[in-house]
Length: 145
Image (cartoon, rainbow, N blue to C red; front, side):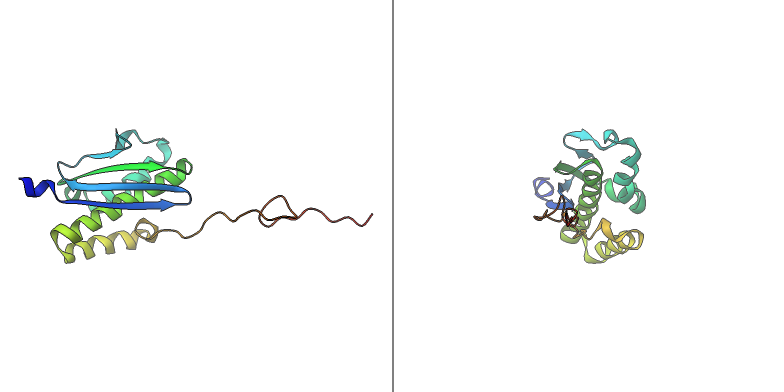
């Protein structure tokens, strides 16, 4: 039983400025976000996005693992997408490390077929403001008199 406790994988999911760190270990199928159960994630409208990996892969794959997620930075929507990515990537890493490569590939293919951003991070970031204008691209109006 002591060997099963050592089966731990740590991965992260990112979206814009939000970062979610997921720790996946052998357990009873508990999913927690910042210490709270995943059913209480706010906002309610985006709660379905957090459950997408579970719904796509089936609850039986999540039954033997506990996933604890810490999320910081960004806004509500960015945090939801970061959590979603962290959950998916943690299960993929767990299956690769402790179960087998074939089932890991099967899980990854199911997720990528549905939405590529569940597994692969979105590289877009906020563009820095420049001088001569009020934002990154907009310039102050030019006047000749």
